[in-house]
Amino acid sequence: MAKAVKIKVKLESTAGTGSFYLAEKNPRTHPEKLVLKKFDKKSKKHEEFIEKKLK
View 1 (cartoon, one colour):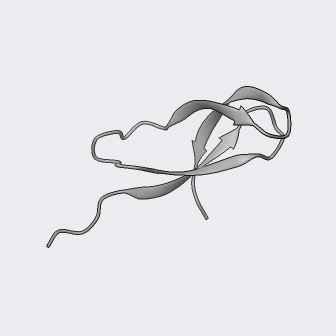
View 2 (tube, rainbow, N blue to C red; view 1 turned 180 degrees about the vertical axis):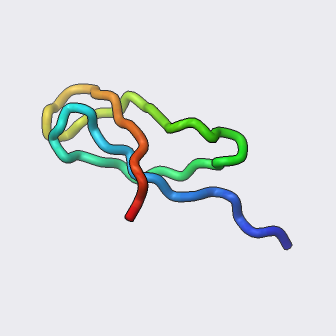
View 3 (cartoon, rainbow, N blue to C red; view 1 turned 45 degrees about the vertical axis):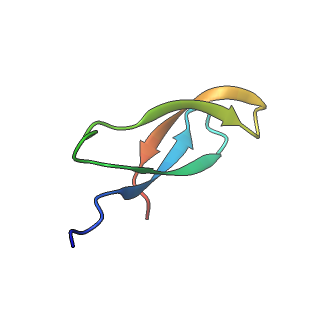
């Protein structure tokens, strides 16, 4: 059996509120950084969330 390829990443808000989401991605098919528009609960608006390294 092969190992699982997906890695966990942290999506952090660009608004600077400190909000984040956890997500999984396959680095073989998507080597670039993940950027998604999601709802920021602290600013109560849709903001861009950029991938950061999960510590």
